[in-house]
Amino acid sequence: MSNLQPLVVYSSGPAPNPFKVAFVLEELGLPWKFESLPMPDLKKEPYTNLNPNGRVPTLVDPNKGGMTVWESGAIVDYLIEEYDKDAKLHYTTPKEKSNTRSWQYFQVSGQGPYFGQLGWFTNHHTEKLPSAIERYTNEVKRVIGVIDGHLAKNGTDYLVGDKVSYADLMFIPYFKSVGKGPLTLMAKDVDTSQWVHYTAWMNRLHERAAVAKIAKIYDDIWVKILAEKH
Ligand SMILES: N[C@@H](CCC(=O)N[C@@H](CS)C(=O)NCC(=O)O)C(=O)O
Image (cartoon, rainbow, N blue to C red; front, side, top):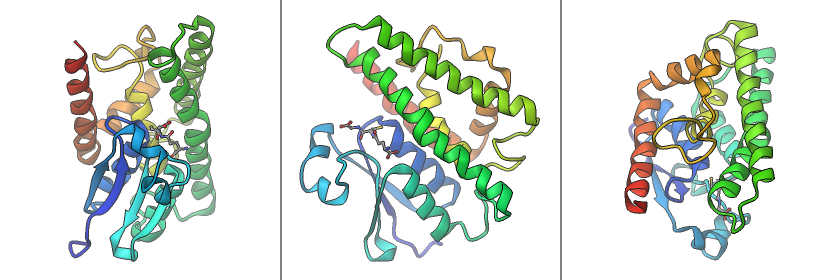
């Protein structure tokens, strides 16, 4: 794949959603780069010509005539269809293929929005609304519990069987942003180590060279932001 031009992932600083795409690109061994834009630029042209929703990520693939894809789930589907010809990150058998998709949809509809709202009410909302923070903290705990319970029940290393898939990778950025770690900005009093299967799964994912590389980029951005805040 060395004759490919870098695929471009539009991002914005430490925003978690573009990192889902970065994990998949890196695991697939594709050349890629971030194009990081300031948040205010996302809601106006020229960016909204690429993504009418004015959010990140958006993928532009110069190898396919500048093919543009937005919404992280659709971007991951595109990458898997176009570039995962050896089925490194997906299954080809109907049951496993469909199960992977279920986890992917749970990530985009069940993890992302709740974590996003917790981040908003914890760090950005002008009023402190304890009931909103409690509501989304409980949802965050519930989502972690769903993953933990599933891994415990199935006894597998990953969400679908013992092979890593794009669905596992998509959960990483938001999960990195909660709990007791030094870089987390929400649900700081939640001790995620109580979910042992979840914790082992996150550790297992971070042992992968590609995951560790992208996780370090994510962490380094947060270290810089937190240093500037203090
Ligand atoms: N459903 C979208 C969510 C994208 C999203 O919410 N991105 C955030 C950053 S993680 C964003 O662009 N926020 C900017 C804003 O809300 O204006 C996806 O999965 O791509």
